[in-house]
Length: 120
View: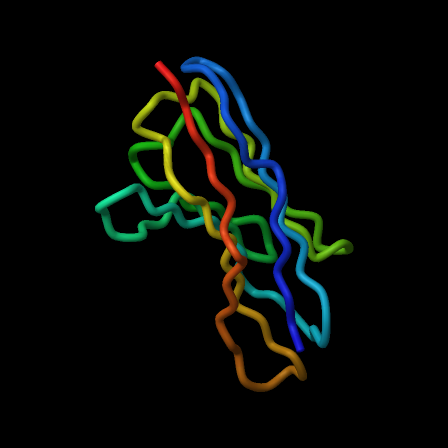
C-alpha cells in the first residue's frame, strides 16, 4: 500500500510565498517521477511541475520563474516552493508520483489535495 501525504497549503496574499510538501510512504522500490498538479474551480487539472529521480524538472509556462520543484530521494518527498503568487494560482494542488512498488510495474498515485488560495 502506497500513500502520498501533502502539507503546506493555505491562504496567502498576492506576492507572497508558500511551500508544499508531499511524502510518499509504503511499499516503494523506486519513484521515477514526482510532481504537482493543480485544479482551479471550473477548470481541468493541469501539471504545474514535475521532477525525475535524477533531478530533471519540467514546469508549466504559467509558473516558470516563480515556482521551484525539488525532491529528497532519501525521504521520498517532493517540495514545491511557490513565490510571487497571484490570484490565478488559486487551486487545489495535488501531489502525483509514478511509483514502482517492487521494481517491475509502475503505478500512478495521487495525494488527497491541498488548497492554495491567493487573495488580491
